[in-house]
Image (cartoon, rainbow, N blue to C red; front, side, top):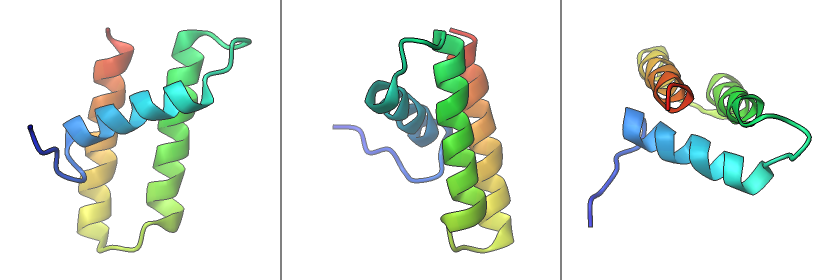
Length: 73
């Protein structure tokens, strides 16, 4: 089994997809559901996650990369 480390692009891809599956709204398009999941995770990183600013910035960049990767599929 492959271990996915917190904060990596792969980690955030999985988190976005899990969030979409858990909170999918049929009234919204797939792209809107993905964006909502991305926004929720971004807010959690910026508000609720206690860490150094360097780590927060790295996580934020990796989250954006994961979002762009999923959005492009």
